[in-house]
Length: 118
Image (tube, rainbow, N blue to C red; front, side, top):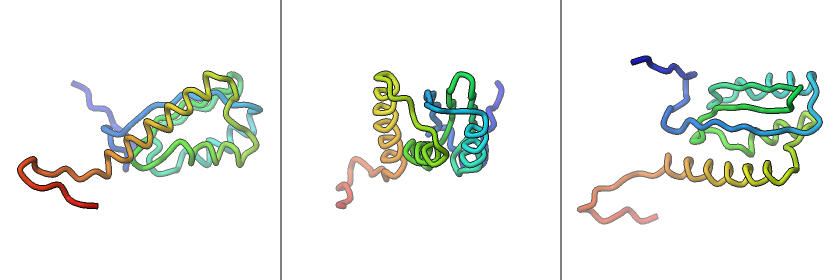
């Protein structure tokens, strides 16, 4: 059985992979985006292809959220594709990221005890 190695700070239980199509992406913008996103805490792998305008990223959703990545992409003059499929996936990704982050923060309690009040 082979063990998968991840970057430090990435929990395999919260690791997710996202595939997004970008608009107005050239080689210069792709390099700048990759240079800023790659060292972020929680990023496990990143592939950015300017020819197909595709961003493939694997990250720990308990640490990093899609909004943070989108902000960096927009800061460098690109944006997510505005097609219906990309917008649909973006909504689903945001929902999943929030769900993972909430579950990571949840403190379980024993079934024979009263749940903690918040």
